[in-house]
Length: 86
Image (cartoon, rainbow, N blue to C red):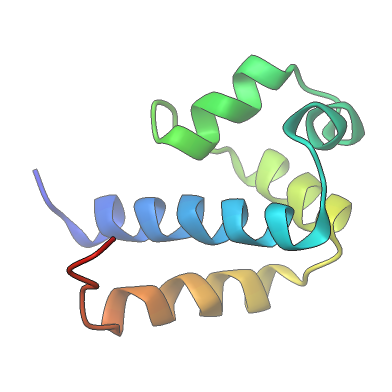
């Protein structure tokens, strides 16, 4: 099923990956700062598991981005034209 929720979770996961790469943060370091295991973080980032609100807020704090900013950037991804090369 391709619902708004599915698309938003995918856009949010992609934006989170962009943010952590831009900051040079490893998944291991991020997971440790969130108090979760790296496999759990990886499941969130790959869409195999939905992120809890608690984990989302811990993540935004750990990467230094306001939750509203991160959600806004993810929402922008939904309105962008698809990149045929992506």
